Image 1 (cartoon, rainbow, N blue to C red):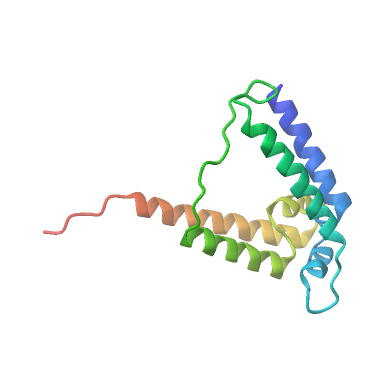
Image 2: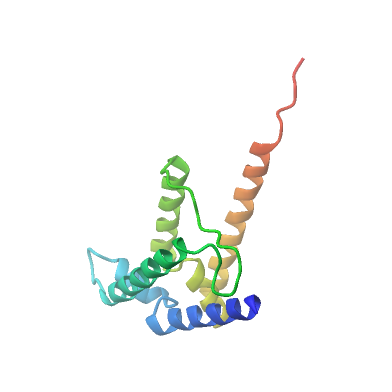
Amino acid sequence: MIAFASLLAGLVFGLGLIVSGMANPAKVLGFLDLAGRWDPSLTFVMAGAIAVGAVAFAVANRRTRSFLGAEMRLPSARHIDRRLILGSTLFGIGWGVAGFCPGPALVALGMGKANALVFVAAMLAGMGIFELFERRKRMPMPRTA
């Protein structure tokens, strides 16, 4: 049942991204172009998403189990560090250059958009490189004599 609910939620999310225009990089870049021909229409999409998310997190914070009985595992980190700032900056740069962020890019890939294929390939490569660096950091340093 949880897998079906997850599939249904993903389909609704993807459909929302398509209907809102978030899977269209030209629309997103128009929204991000504050100094040029700014398209404010995605402001309403973001405001709606923030409102729904705020309500959902408020409800989730009061529960120990989801409505389907799964354990609630909400993020617990609250501190802002260099890694968060750097990651957020890189995310924003990528979003501003490509007009995609991960969710809409996957939706656009499913729609057969070639530019989404390039973005998703670069995203996966970046994730792989990050994982290699993380593994290397966790490896014990060899002793020198």
